[in-house]
Length: 255
Image 1 (cartoon, rainbow, N blue to C red):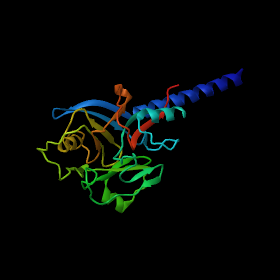
Image 2: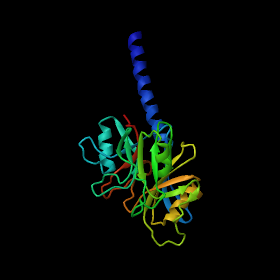
Image 3: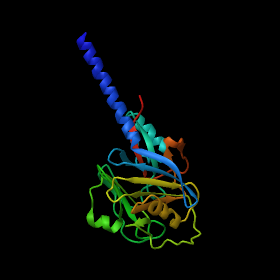
Image 4: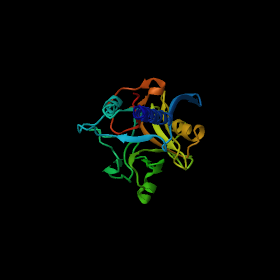
């Protein structure tokens, strides 16, 4: 009888630990709708010390994941689920990354340090680097010089906020407005906030939410017009064009 009770307690303790781990992973992501300067946004804050924050590109089949549902389906086979996701950087027509890309420590695409056409080449651009206990937006040339050990990394551009200052090319009176998404990080790398605009905004307006509302010294533009978010906390999971890199948080699936 004692042996049976001991085994039962062990199983219950194990299940409780799994449940607590799942709750902790979910608690490491907080999503909300917010207003700033009369404009509507959705923001998801992630604690990289607690969250299993990753980048996704190629599915086990060799095809690009492309959609949040495809990632969630693959995770289900591992007893896991996607508790947050967002398109994670610019990509070519074949959905390969335009710039630097690292997944599980393996470099898939090199750093692109030079200026070029389009938003990506509007220097300074930057790289979002995920490490074991922190995540940082780093200006590309600084990243290339330091070469931090990133488990995951994605390059995009332009930078929205650089050391507390808006990108020098952003115009207050710009008429270029799109749905846009990006990511900002704190100085110590323990606070990561992903933001998508819920209405078309200019670069200047979008940069200001990171600097003036969220108080983040570094922020990076991830994309515009194709911008989408998966935020189950808000009963929201956008669907649309097929994506290239996707950034997301993984947690144990509820039993």
